[in-house]
Image 1 (cartoon, rainbow over the protein chains, first blue to last red):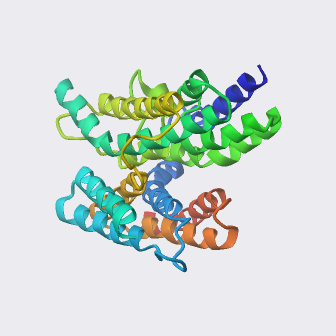
Image 2: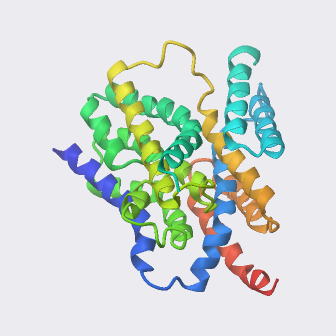
Amino acid sequence: MRESVLVAVMAVVTILLRFLPFLVIRKETPPYISYLGRVLPPAIIGMLVIYCLKDVNPAAAPFGLPELISAVCVIALQVWRRNSLVSILGGTIIYMVLVQRVF
Amino acid sequence: MNHQNTVKQAFINTLPVMAGYIVLGMGFGILMRNAGYGVLWAFSMSLFIYAGSMQYVGVSLLAGGASVITTAMTTFMVNARHLFYSISMVDRYKNAGKGKPYMIFGLTDETYSLLCDGVTPEGSDPNLYRLLVTAFNQSYWVSGSVLGSLLGTVLPFSTEGIEFSMTALFIASFTGQWLTSDDHIPALTGLLSTLVCLAVFGPGRFLIPTMLLITLILTLLRGRKEAA
């Protein structure tokens, strides 16, 4: 019972956070919010990239090399082919080979 | 507009998320099982909360007997970044149709990264595409949670490193946006603010300061943008 309440609390708080801006801004979008809508996405994605790599330790073996090599592969594939699926799968396969077989 | 093509595009573009969500979802299911909560619990949490890192934290809240207040505060702190995701989607989801509430509910990091540039595949129905991307992603997450809970173990072949598909998804999205935009100030603001906050606040609690710093800097730079 107590646990069901906790799950409900987690769900409600998460839903509120996701819905709040949509509930507050109902009619005309203020220019400031439109501006944020244009500039926030690249900044947030940049944040998420670093968030994913936050536990990499460049001071200890393997010195973050699997992540660095795989990340460079993803970027290179994306620049070359402009196909996210190819970049992501390519980078992930290279990373899996690196952590399972090489390092 | 061709619905079959829309379904196909949404499926193909969510394949990387499938790889990551199934494995991470299984990890969650296994944690739940080890904490003494069965498949119905894992299923319900992935269905109703649907926030990856929060659900991992949620396992310890449940098992540790946290209070309602602690649970609410923790959820707020872990998921506060979603406020900013939604703020930046208010315009793009303006006329999103009947599926809009579900699309807002399902705006995870990964769904956001697939949809935040506002670009949908050519020849597809934009709203149907967004709805399907959202729903496919959640179906992978729920399936992974249920599988992990039922099997209690990872897949028979080594999936070590497959979680990098999430990192790769963000890197590809970042690179893609960089290539299609002339203005790199927002992207650089994001990277540098995050690095600064990571150094100052440490890996455990830097996301909220980062979001605030990013918003502050971009707000201060607004004049520059409007003048250009």
